[in-house]
Image (cartoon, rainbow, N blue to C red):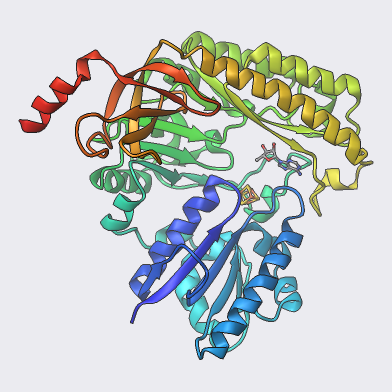
Length: 462
Ligand code: 5AD
Ligand code: SF4
C-alpha cells in the first residue's frame, strides 16, 4: 500500500539534506513524496530555529495543519502530523502540549528511528529529542537510484554535524549537539552512489564543515582537505564545494587545496558576522577582523579568482554606530560576490539573549545600509563577468522554453539557449559559456565557439 508523504523543509541546506534522507528512510515503508500537504498521509515539518520567531511561525503553521487533519478525518482519512528539526529539539513536549493535533516530535539526531516512532505514534503522541549513542547515518536508508536522479546533477552530502564553538548568538550547539564527523569510507561510498546516478557536483555540508575530523580509510583522523582529495578521485565528480566554514579552521593545507585541487570550486562561504573586534569578542568568535582579512588574503594568493560570500549579524547587543561602520568597512575591503545579512534575534538559552538589546529601529536601519552595500557588490561582481567565458555545469531546463540553466564556478546561475535539440541535451555536462547579458540575479550567454551547434550535432550523431 503506498502512502503519501509531504515534507516541508525550513532553514539551511542541512535541513534540506535531512528531509531527503527522511524520505529515503520512509520509501521502503511505502511512502511516496508529494509536493503539497493536501492528500498527504504523513506531514513532516522540518523546522529551523536559527533566527526570528521560529517557534511562533511553527505554531501558526500547525494551526493550519490541524484544520487539514480535521478535514481529512471528516473524509475518513487519518493524517499523521510530525515536527522535526531544530525547533522540535528546542521545544520538545511543549509542541504537543500546545497543539494536540501533533502526533510526533523528533529531533535531528533521531531521524533514523522514524519508522519505529511512527508505529508508536499510532497509539498517542510521541516525543523523542534524545541524543542517542548510535550514529543515525548508519541507520538511515540510502536513496534509490531513481530518487537520486530526480534530485539532479548537484547534490549535498552531510559530512559533519553539530558545533563546539558556542558563539554567543547561536542555538546550533544546543539543537544539533556536539561536533561529530562521519568516517571517510561512508562519505566516499555515498559520493560513489551519487556519481553513479549522474551527480557531477557535490557540496559537503556541516555546521562547521572545515572542523571536519572523521576516521580516515587508514584508521587515522582525516581532515576536510584529506576528504576533498579523496572525493576528487571519484569518477564522474567534477566539482566539489563545502559549506559552512569557520575562519579559525581555515588551515594552510585547506587554503593550498584551493590552489592545487582543480575540482575544488573557487567560491567560499566564510561567515565573519561583524567587522568590529569588540563585537567579535562579545560574540565569542575567537578571531579579530584583521585575522579574518588575513585568511581572505591567503586564500586569494592561493586562488586569485576565488569569490567569497559571508553572513553578517547587525544589531548584536552593544553594537555601536562605530562598530557597525567597521562591518561596512570590512565589507568594502573584502568585496563579496554575495552575502547574507540578518538582524540579531535573541535565541532563548543562548548567552547573548540575556544581554541588553538594541532597539528594533536601529537594527532595521543598519540592516538596510548593509544590504544596500552587499547588493552593490553583488551587481559589481556579476558585471565583471560580462564578456568572460565561464565553465557552466548545466543543471536543468529553465522556465523559458529552449533555455537551460546551470552554475558558473562562482555559483552564479547562468542561462543559455540550447539551440541543438530538446533543452535537456546538455544537462550534467560542463561547457564554456561566453557571458553576453547580466540580469539582476542571473547571467546569460552563448555556448562558446568550440561547442557550436555544428559540433554538438556531430557529437550527438556520433
Ligand atoms: N540572530 C541573527 N542571525 C543569526 N545567525 C545565527 N544565529 C543568529 C541569531 N541569533 C546567522 C549567522 C549565521 C547564519 C546561519 O545565521 O549569521 O552564520
Ligand atoms: Fe536552522 Fe541551524 Fe538548525 Fe540548520 S542547523 S535548521 S540553520 S537552526
